[in-house]
Length: 287
Image 1 (spheres, rainbow, N blue to C red):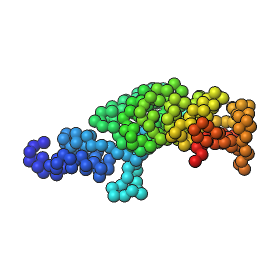
Image 2 (image 1 turned 120 degrees about the vertical axis):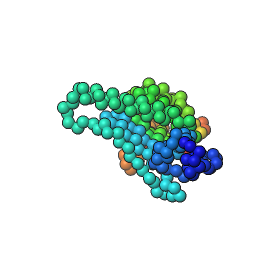
Image 3 (image 1 turned 180 degrees about the horizontal axis):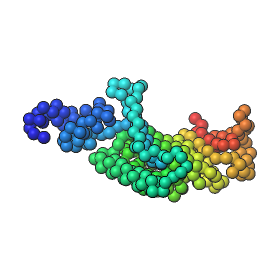
Image 4 (image 1 turned 90 degrees about the horizontal axis):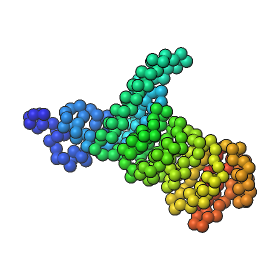
């Protein structure tokens, strides 16, 4: 950019500190438009902290990204944008193998560039609520994307798509997982990812089965953490019989009007309740 062009560029002619503070007032769409002005503008925009209220990435038969951010000077309204990469799932059952292979290859290339774009930013992304999933994502993809988020700003993480317990073990060590206050695991997993939930105040998980030792570990360890608030586990009660009924009877559980049973659990530090019905186990901290 020539000196004359620079002098005419209001943004680049302002003090650097002002340029950085300006990022608080620019929506993502405006930033993307500024990046096209020049290489200096692109570099400046990329160096600005990126703050989003919500960010979701789904990669299955197609890839889509959804985000929302607060409007300027408005706290109770949101601007939402939806970006769909045009790799739609073929609805008919007559798949063409070569087309399927090409589609998978294109999706893999897109995911590679998406991860490269996110990781190339000179800062972590400030996002409050984050959602990630899809059968195209590997455990390494989860680690790569989650590590690009600023852990201090995260309030909730939602994970979906078929995953194994080993997959969750690989992301349990991430600071983003350790510090977030709410974790939702939407697809059923084979076992409770206890290591991943070891420091989470609120969680919701779907499991195909829960063993008695896992249940006891939650009661004796997780429920006695200082920061625990509520844990919800979706699991069929039939999968836990007869030991779950024996546990409830032993702890003087009472029958609720909805047919569930609630027991009060006295611990060395805190008192909690456990409510069990045909489909859910709900742990709550008593105030």
